[in-house]
Length: 349
Image 1 (cartoon, rainbow, N blue to C red):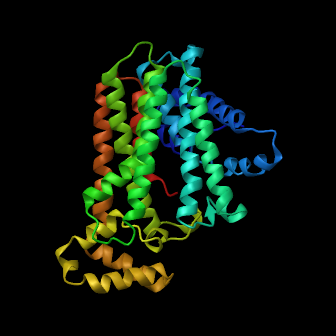
Image 2 (tube, rainbow, N blue to C red):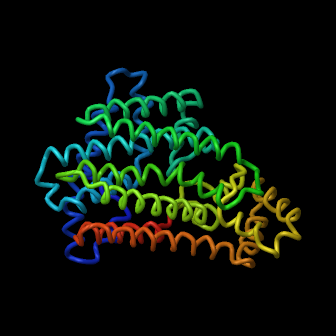
Image 3 (cartoon, one colour):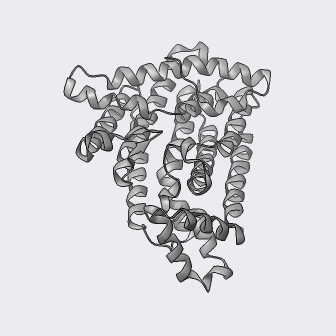
């Protein structure tokens, strides 16, 4: 089945970027095949749960970034099958970890839907979802071990541990409406941005003909900034996005007691310090599904510029991400990475 990231369509504004997209399509097809090949099982009891993974796979953002990062440091990457195969493996490893976190997140968030379809735990129960997530983690680590170097496996293990730590920190911060911006940014860097940064870093490492730490670090920084902006956009969509496009009800973060950037910015304003208690009561009404309360919340956030402030923060991080690409050679792939960064802010789901 042909796969291509939904947001890379935003990057097809020049002939050069169109050329990148044409090389991206077969690479992502190989990632999809590698994923299917690696999680496929002849055991019926396992296969019925694994079938849900196909529904979880969405934009393939992380494999896209792994390949384009490799292409940015080595324009001849598609011609070197060994290097390309390693980048495909890296993309599949990171995507499997991402899919595992989605399965577990739906359990933690008690989400009945994922991209408009029943979540694994809604269809088969929490125990099955937890074990399926564990299975995907195990398959990702097994696939990573097929690479020639242990360094990547060590890096992937380190990052996965930090992703889990970020999730635990977020759980500990539920209903903590006094959370600071620094706490919030640390959590989203671990939960969301690190895997995106790892895709860029490791894609460039395995795509290069020779090691270049400066390129790897520049792409890691790019990925961390794009990943954090991506999460801030998720925060905004959760508050003001289209539930049909999102595949989940609006205000889900508030219902789960997750302080997100617009809420933190609002609570940090002088206008809200004197009315924190009524605002907390408003959040409680939103959490209960009160649609009028949700409209009142949007009005309150608009009145203090908190929605715009969160959007500005995301835009600033995208600008910094694009600036970090200056350490790379000027190539169509580098331009494509810049366009992908901008596309992360324009998405509606």
